Image (cartoon, rainbow, N blue to C red):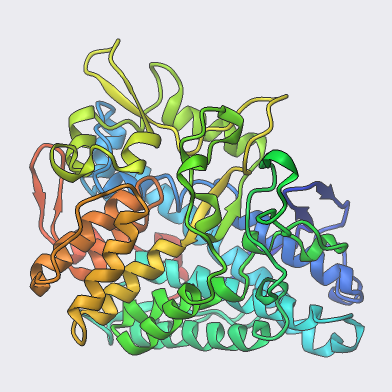
Amino acid sequence: MKRYLIFIIPLLVFTSCKKFLDVQPESDVTKEQLFSTETGFQEALNGVYTACAGGNLYGGNLTVSNLDIMAQNYTFSNVTYQKIASFKYKDDVLKDKNSTIWTAAYSAIGNCNQILEQIDKQKGIFSGNNYSIIKGEALALRAYLHFDLLRMFANSYKYSPAGKGIPYVTTVGIKSTPFLSVQDALNMAIIDLRSARTLLSNTDPIIAAGYVVGYPNKTYPGGFTGKKQTETSSNTLFLQNRRHRLNYYAVCAELARVYLYKGDFPNALSNANDVITANKFPWTAQEDAFNTSVQQRDKIFYPELTFGWYIQTTDEVNMMVALFTAPNVAPYQPTPLQLDNIYEKSSIGAEDWRYRQWFSTVTDVTPNRSYLIKYTTNTAPLVNLHPLIAPALRLTEMYYIAAEATYDTDPVKAIGYLNTVRTHRGIIDLLPTTLNKTSFINQLVKECRKEFYGESQIFFMYKRLNLDIVAPSGLIYPASNNIFVFPVPDDELTYNH
């Protein structure tokens, strides 16, 4: 792993306010100065979140870009996008994007390591539980970033655990970090996540019974207070909006995701159930998903998000419009027929909340197109029901993981997990409890594709299960490393040989 110049950019971003601090980059400020106060550590950690939520990572490339295109969610006339959808990894457009992701992710990892290198030396400066919270989040961020790089740039664990993985960088310095095997890199991520879970288990405010998840801008009738959120009630800005950070339950959810990738069903199920049984994340109510007021409509099932990247910034808002809903020019558009097939409109899908609420079909152009509107926001002075978030970990994914991890020992219970999600998405017909394993996996994949539309997670599921990818035209891309493994950037291979 070659050395990237690391800058710690302290930036606080929350739903309730935004605070920019004029702090010099590390080249001008010594580590001792930057990390001499608790506030300095908080600023540094917030800087990592801000970098991750930018367009180079989860505010763009790793949520609404090539991974989603390769999942065949759209139909393109543009040659460039067609190349991406057909896995032309040697083309410059893919090479440049892959290099950007690789560099940005390792830069963010480097900033996590800067924090982790200093925090134990300064343990005495922290108040309350902030030492455990900051260290836990930094470890979780480091693991989260490495795991996504592993899922992109290495073989899947199931088919090549001993194959070449990625560098798992845990130190600060100029020495190159060697590539680990897939198995070793995955185990390193698990170690970081388990450590983060321990640190956050008794310290994270989200665990408290009084921490109520909900909408920051919901209007409650008649002075009703029973379901009002408390996510912004802390007097300390740093401890507000825990779902916009890698909180305790988000770490459990990421552990469930990583263990499933490894094929460790017992641990995947245990961590998924920790999120499910906490009853912390309520199912989205129909009145919120279908509210006639544009201000009070939930477009992404916000209460169910265990963790999401806060991207309520002008650049990201404008990017989402440009990609999905800009009249006559937005490139990311499925055809209505393509959408009907994905959501099974002719059978169970006509009443699916996602099909009805996430898309707007335009019929005054040829061919007709459907706009994805889950990322649209209202313009000022209207107040949105919730901020613009790039979903990272959903309650529904925990049900999907629990279902897959349970099937071999209790197929009826596994199908029950899947039916629970379908019911909360407006699908009336329940899956029969007699599904065999092949049929069950087929139904699970179809359900996940609907839920993760525009979020890039379905590509990783295809890879993990080694499934063929079918284009809208019917062309089949056979499951293989040719489509599932992103080439490591050339300059990294040159440097780290």
